[in-house]
Image (tube, rainbow over all chains, first blue to last red; front, top):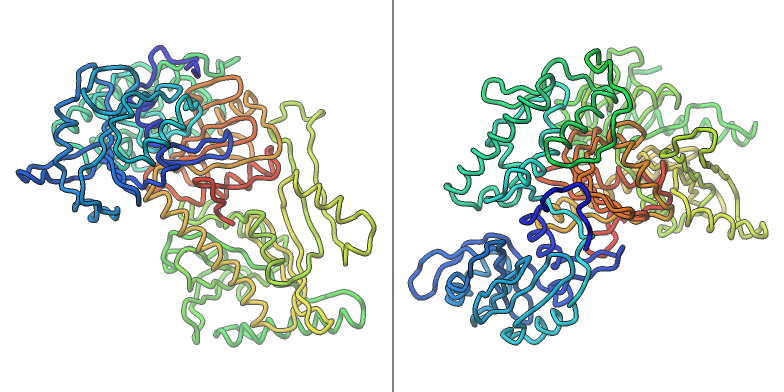
Length: 289
Length: 348
């Protein structure tokens, strides 16, 4: 497993999403063909479906479809069983697939749970994507191509897969949120930039999920991001960042000078719990930059 | 010089320049008229919002989307073809030294974030071979930009002009080996018809082309437009990939990157790459970075190994970052660089 050398706690949710999503993709170096890519599935994230028995809305994390069939993929780091959620997906009306440009199949989906560690989720296939791909209960998969592809991918190294564009997720812990904000904060230093409201920051971090999460989760995330940003300004970058007219924005004191930029990187690293950033050999004059 | 007010005027002027050069080439063995230069520009602006690099833009009367510059220090020397939404062409009648400086300044200051160069990959630069043109020169570049010690930097550059390489023993082999290891900075191409040169051009990785010789103005302009169209198609394809999938762009290199030196460089936003990044995870042979591309201030996530990098562009960040980072990093420290998405070469 790749050691997260700098992190006191791993970015569990991001690792879960990253390694699951990348299982639909392919890379040449190091050679990696995700099992869902190998079985030729296309996917959509957080799409809305209806329960074919009662019309209630259902929103699995990922649905995927290909010529051979379709499946639902749920992702969680929760220590609780998701058996009930998974059962509910059996009733998804498959005709909804066409709405998302996916091939429709007049049958129930295969259902897969993606996790980082073992929890009993009932009679469903589970994949574990923490470092090396592990699979359990694959016999519950009805689609032979999908099942074979998953079995072939067992023990595949997932530690060097690319990051995904989603950097914030609901239920993230404070340090995970800080790390998910780093590049958004750096963008605030753009000369003559307009700054960002907390809502813009959250939308940036949620990326492709920004219009797909519920109001309650969104509000909670906005509060958490506000908290972490205020700590950043108060305790780490008080000279260079401020909250003004409802926006986070860089101060006039920030100049695009390499020492100042290195200082900002160092402070962001400290704030986000990433120790071991390149140290500043000397920094006596940074106030002048 | 007569003022150029229409596209026809411009073509007449260009044709006269080409013919003068052909005559002087025949008589004296060299050209005297300024050679036509063109710059491919990646644009996210409507033409009426684009500041002119010198003076003001004035629409050419008989055209759709063509403009000429007026009222500046060097009027009647720059012409903008903005007939494509994403890729513009600026033609320049100035000397190369003046022209390069003006375009650099314009891209750097006047239109920051919404205009960029088109960064031509090796497949773009070698595209003309597929069109039956003959390669007549090659420029390779490796700056060793991650070296901390200038004295021992392993920089290398090569500019070779040649005729029919098959007639010089061993030359093809040398050139092929060199171009498989290093980034191509420029490529010179000739189109011939019935034994005569009809166009001779030199394309650069930063989207510039010099028309060294041409016999027909329309043929010359259409060859530049061909590259612009090709690049516009590549941008569209890459934008669709960014919007519709969550896979990363993969850059594969031939030279091994010193990851510690890379990390130090990007922490300060210095160097040719102009990336300002925080290292968020580290292994001896793999690092994860997040930050901004200072060319545009778009956010990027970059995961990098000794001979590859994964580039993720969140939100609506401009996909021109992929060929830009590939080109600049290739010439700076990574050698021959290819861009892939899901195992398929893009910007090809």
